[in-house]
Length: 305
Length: 204
Image 1 (spheres, one colour):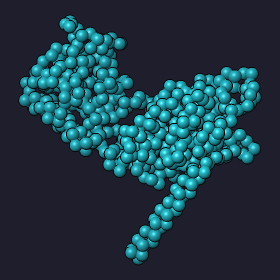
Image 2: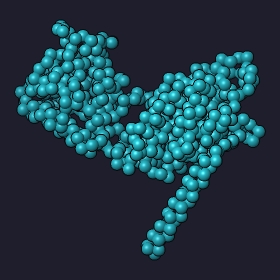
Image 3: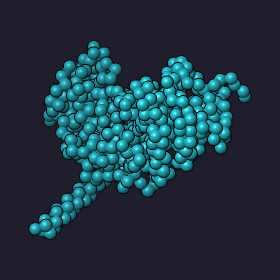
Image 4: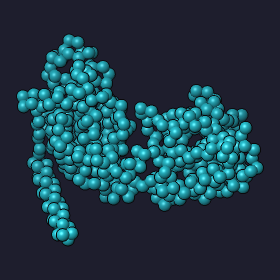
């Protein structure tokens, strides 16, 4: 369906830069089984980016874009921060909102899309840092959840304002000393996943992005649940290696260390009852699809034999 | 309102005023403008063809509205744009002139840097103009706001002659602008180029 919509005009095909030709020929639009395993095999929906070498946020971006179930009909809403350096390079519709009001923008956008395209599935995904989600934009974040707006909120939690040099944020851990927070954080990290659950989110996950298959699973769940049932929230640890004094190759290990059972990013998941039913339904459909694919493969093998 | 302001090749200065703020008005259907003066469409066709034939590097910048086959109309326009380019290429002296067809596939700023040999970007169109030494160009299939932005930046920082083949009401900020562009209209411009071939002195 979507591949039919993104055709380069035949007469001007040869002058189109290679990255656009690649998007049409080798990207995974319209492929319902798209996922992180396409990275390296298919054209990614992210072109060059200007994040730091080894930045875990860039890994997270790649996994998320590879896992969106319906990228051609998805609009992402970003906010001020390092993520806004990446959005100009992604082949998914996106809006840069004012710092903090990303969930308010997404609310209006989702409603407008439902009116404008009643017969088409349109997903809205908010992607913002912890400052935008928890400090400056907490009002908009919570109000969207209270109203049961049907979109996914992803928070890239790097536990400080990394983009502006390391100021304290609500999601910073207690006692942490940052470049521009020299006395150390005096109160506990805000427990937003729990607040999200109490505010009406149907699917809440707290995790790191060290495991791409896990990121794929939670993104797909979150988008499907938001589409059918109500708000979903993912809090993902994407440490800023510069601000915590790590080298480029140490981001992955930092995430692994932080997801141990006793640590603050140990995997936590909340799924509401209706969301559980939907996940089970989706899993059953997936199982059936795989069985059907297997049957088809077997019949082809017999025919060839 | 009358004005003495004329939309001329630059470099005007770093931030040229928008032509509309200087009193330049858009043409009515069936008309065009040259340097801000309203003229008949045929007169503008002739002038645009002359500018292409006299330029060292006459260039067409097709934008997303024609680069992508959104619908049948867009595909037809793309065909017409290609035809115009081929016509200009065949009508200029290959020893002295080089016709170019450079796309504007995206409006977002390109990082870490744009490749000016293969594309143009509305946030810094002057880079492509400078790099390829383009002295006459035509925008077609570019959304209004991005075309205005490009045309102003080009007028501000380069001496390139700008033509807008606009599908809406035209562009004051171009030195020459058509309105209500169709594949047929682009074809007529190609006919003018063909007709004037050999009559316009090549650049020195």
